[in-house]
Amino acid sequence: MWWAARFRLTGDGADLARVAAVRAGAPHARLTIDANESWAGHDIAAQTAALAALGVEMVEQPLPAGADHALQGLRTALPLCADESCHTAADLAAVAQRYRAVNLKLDKAGGLTAGLALARAARALGLDLMLGCMLSTSRAIRFALPLAPLARWIDLDGAALLARDRSDPLRYEGGMILPE
Image 1 (cartoon, one colour):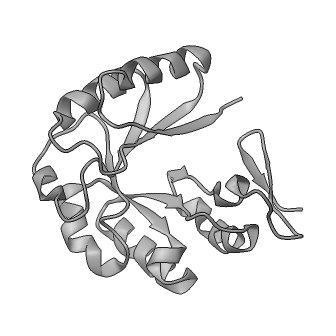
Image 2: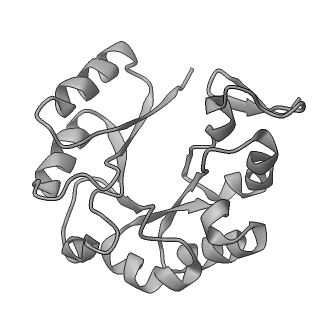
């Protein structure tokens, strides 16, 4: 069985040890990293090379939005995925110069129609897609589900992080999202 694990790293010296421990404990898991805009001042090429050696698939938003121009022309061992740097299709021209993927979140894209336009435009530019979400109820997550076949990575756990969801929640089981 394949499991997916996503975690945030800050670029500190213990990050690789934490990823190695997760890899040792879950050798078949698909691992992606959310640097969450925290790698300013770090050697991003070296970080991605070390993470690739541990079987990580992708790194999300290594530099702060607005300061990610430093990624232009940078060669990395892993795809970099824009999150905070990409809200709508209007952001894609700059994003395509710096990233190989975009995290599509319906909340920031402007809904399903705008999200579909973003997905199509990103794919036309050769960018991979991650389908993500904000902290939200199952109802909001349900609107994103039709876009799942377009995405290489899916992170729709916003409802699973709530203390109390709606009366018609999604079920999260074994790495799957199951409608009730």
